[in-house]
Length: 401
Image 1 (cartoon, rainbow, N blue to C red):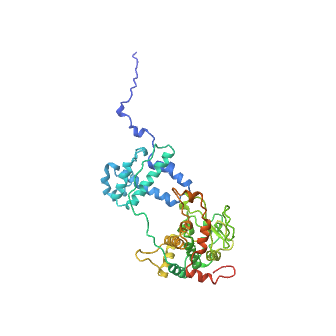
Image 2 (image 1 turned 30 degrees about the horizontal axis):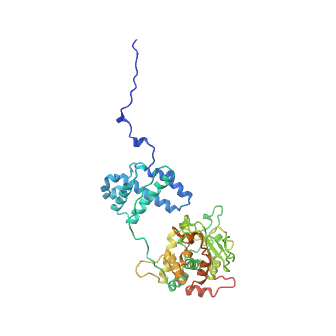
Image 3 (image 1 turned 120 degrees about the vertical axis):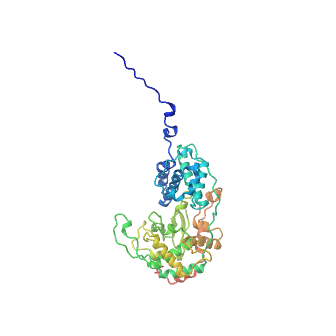
């Protein structure tokens, strides 16, 4: 009987799968899903920020579907590439070098997707994902790319006191918002929407007073998007003692305080601001009976369209517009606030806005307590004539409407 010999042979080396596919090194997109997005969510970054990252990643994937750095010229077929249904595989994140990122930025430029600033932001998102992975030892290091130059400072448009007065007067014609956002935004509370105290004119006038005196960013005061963190009644006090446990100051009119979300990473402490009599009277006038600490001061419906339609209508009624640009925006009231405070008390504008000091500002960060300067600035700021005229007819409870 013949014996059967089974012979096992090692596969030829060239027949083996490429080492690139044997390694389980993740791509940038996979690092985003597994590492960086959860990290940003833990830091409570806004949905808008996460969406921006995902937009940049989508274009990063489209860059590779067009052939990557080897075929940058294909970017001229922008319509075909951006509508492509199939995204080809990315390389491992460890193969993303400075030259690859520069090629990605050039590719964006050929597609006419924004200018230098847009290209820098796209590359910055990819680098942020790589850097986060490197800090967790998922990658050896993240490449650095020199950003392209672009205009960094927006025009410093601001309104005169007369223009702010005109806005305040024009708010008398406002018709939105008339009711609060209702119980549907409050779990377990299904009450119907109720009229806002002061009506649309009183609500907008109070907002204009606060924007002028304290200069918060738009949604630090009024949240027209569901994920915003606007000022709440729990952050307003009409007691004279400061809510800051380390402060010995008192203010007869009360206080407001909040942590500016945009600066929270660098300055997590609350910004404590004393109320002047005009700001306090307006806040008292719109505070609803039974307001809870978690209730927004401006409990307006979440609708950016209605918000900006009402705002633009007030500007149009007031006849307030800049000389060169199309229209003013609420951010220009923030600049108006900073300018007015600096004109009144030099150096106080940045303190009122709560700007974080960075770099070598050791004295400002560790030694100087600015609360006395903030108090002087708020109480001495000259008010637009319309504010003072309405305040002069306040009732015995310091309510205006």
